[in-house]
Amino acid sequence: MNKTYVRLAATAVMLVSAATSAYADSLTLYCAAEEAWCQQIKTTFEEKTGITVDMTRKSSGETYAQLRAEAGNPKGDVWWGGTGDPHLQAAEEGLTVEYTSPMRGELHDWAIKQAQAANNKTIGVYSGALGFGYNKDLLAKSNLPEPKCWADLTKPEYKGHIQMANPNSSGTAYTMLATIVQLMGEEKGFEYLKALHANINQYTKSGSAPIKAAGLGETTIGIVFMHDAVTQTAAGFPIVTVAPCEGTGYEIGSMSLIKGARNPEAARQFYDWALTAEMQSKAKDVKSFQLPSNKNATASDLSPDLSTIKLIDYDFKKYGSSAERKRLLQKWDTEVSTLPQ
Image (cartoon, rainbow, N blue to C red; front, top):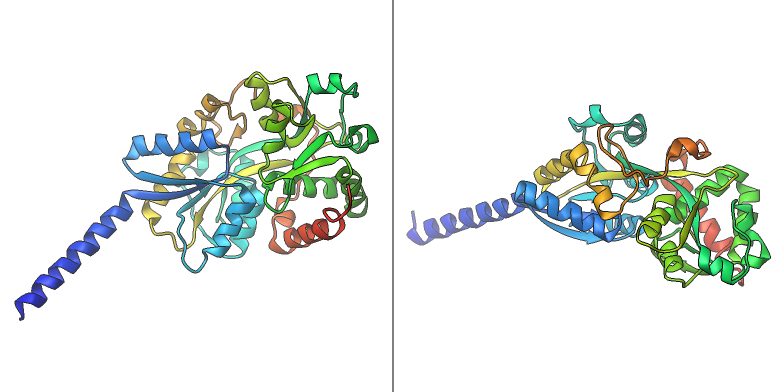
């Protein structure tokens, strides 16, 4: 056999082995939680396993859009965090893969139900209720009454005082859209959203941005998940968290394995680790106050107690479906976002 051919073949084998080894020691993570939490997850997993994590932080809607764009040539391995609706949509569209973790026995029922709704292509990692928060100093300065209900936010005195995210890019805002429709019915719900639109000063890209702006005094009220409002209070900002009197929806923050991942072994290792009590108990150390899905994990005393909040029977399967999500977003784009303010 030609010696040059043999050397070339040996070199090719070495290159393939090196590439395989590199893949085995690395992981690409799409993280849709707060930056500090995402960074903590990245560094803790790297320290624990020696696997290098390439982490990108984006909102839920942006991550879902990225998965769709990369479907022909996936670059990510795991999608961790963000509201469960786009995870369910990704599962329905075949962008993620089925996996049953040995950690399932330690999880709350609501986390397992999320998995069952997606044929085990996603799973719940945390939960939190939707609400809003307000800057009590700005409220007093503007001589405004304390808002306690969804209905209060449409009152004319709050014009220009409210921020929420855009439901096309933000899972938080889509949860709000789906919550209002379920709470009030679609016709009355969209009438409400139109009235609310008149009081909105900005639609942000990220779901937590409105309450951060309220903390900094850039807006008075932010519509967010309640745990994000608590984060601002814990950081020393004058934010008061509100559970709307009519009732409210909630999220099941989820995790999914991306179809066609380059590092499936490392992805499954991350997936199992991310469901452990040890990992989930660290969230409070970076002021993330969601409720963990592992029954043995420890949440912060500051985390909103869902048992004290009037929650609607949120239909995750319906409002996480591709057709319903697209329909509602298109209707919001056509009937709400185009209105003058």
